[in-house]
Amino acid sequence: WSSDVCSSDLTTPIPIRNDKIWRPAGRLDDFPEGRPTAVDLDGHPVLVLRTSEAWYAFDPLCTHRGAPLRDAYHVGGRLVCLWHGSEFDLATGLPRTRPATCPLRIWRIAVEGDQVYLRRDLNVGGDVVPT
Image 1 (cartoon, one colour):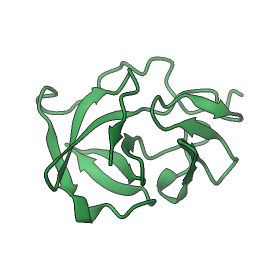
Image 2 (image 1 turned 120 degrees about the vertical axis):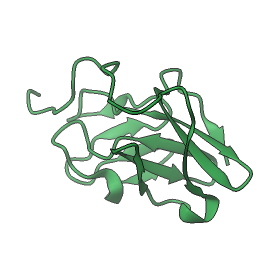
Image 3 (image 1 turned 90 degrees about the vertical axis):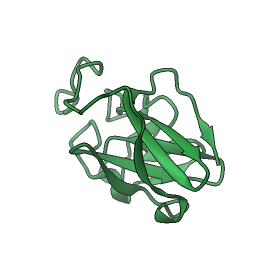
Image 4 (image 1 turned 60 degrees about the vertical axis):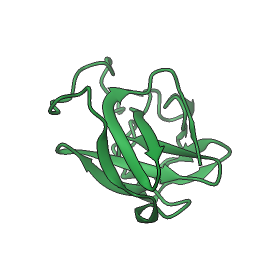
């Protein structure tokens, strides 16, 4: 599985201004339910997914071969890549099926009122924000 494009260290910092602050990602209406939506977090692309149960934020490329995940679909708390069928746990980013062996980077997300926020630090604990 040497074709995976992930880093061995998901804690490597991504250069983003002031990582202690929640950044506005958009309004609730900007995120249609069931479809990953691209946002920019200080120059770093992130996909936000609103499901009927929860909100998720993750990097936009599959860790197996770099497939764009904007076209991926979700089922049962998992994100499924259309290229080779890799499945990722949406709460933790862990791959649940091969061919991907490296986790997907998951971002902290919060909803307050009608505003959605992202934060640069990773959601290592797998906290889920209900819808």
